[in-house]
Image (cartoon, rainbow, N blue to C red; front, side, top):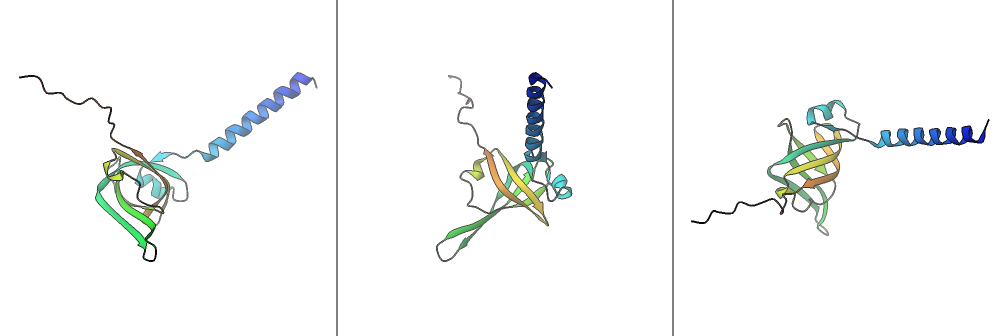
Length: 131
């Protein structure tokens, strides 16, 4: 084989390998109903906080936060409990949109990560017209 053929085969092999590796790490955006059907898979769910329903459990000895639970409404208006093994994210109650990344198990969504879309301070405000 020529040197050009060998180099092109190596490039094709590494390109295919990269595509396979990144494809396995990719997760999809779904609703709670779809997440229940795909239970062991890691998924993204987009939604909003349902009311101000926080259950923050702490360890009594050192007030270490063990986990946080809250209710979230997805894009189909389905309300489910989200369990997060970390402190409550700052400004969660003010977020316009929440993306939870994790998996659905039994009657609860277990989030590994929470991403927040907070209201922008750069949105134009209405200025009252002069009288």
